[in-house]
Length: 247
Image (cartoon, rainbow, N blue to C red; front, top):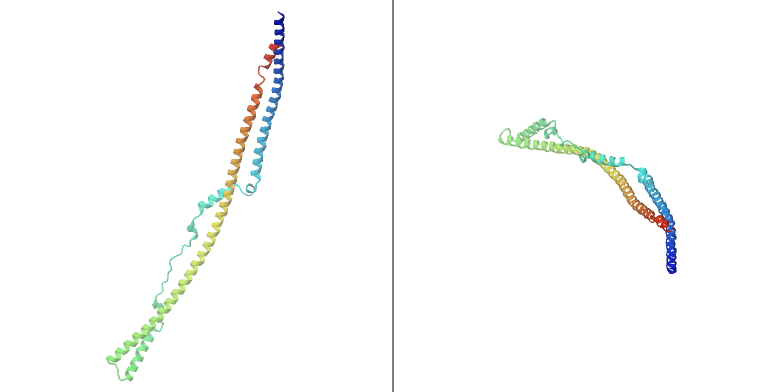
């Protein structure tokens, strides 16, 4: 009987030790849970700070300060309005309405007549008179003089036509050069607008990716912290039941 009492006493002491250990663990768990909850608050605060930092950076970097989404609209609007045909001079065909006749010597008929008379006189002086020989000589000289006058008129015709065509070409070139300058200016403007548009688009894309990446990392960290807090809260369940059964 004495031995049984001793064993019972030892068992009761052992149970009391278990209860004390449970109580110690309970308060230790409470401290761990408090720290875990504080960590949740810290992670949430860090996530907000990171989000604010990203917003501030992209709101105040050089691209955001000097550009806007309106620049992208301007670029695409300029592309839609661009028409290469606007920069090619639409000229009429070269029109030259003069003929060789316009350049004949105004005294052509008198010159031909004088040539015929001179040949006639020469034929008479040579004793040819008005015969077949004289007629042939007159016809030949008149034909030669007519060809000479035609060649002179043709030369003047070609010279005048070439001169007017050169003036026409110079006029076309001058106007085309103006359009080329406008075309170059437009292309430069499109290039500049494209550069700005690309910068705006890249800036917006980078902000989106950075924000999304930070959110994903933040959510993961927050979920981990919340799970740790939840785990710390369950560690003390049933402690008071155990202790009350011992004392």
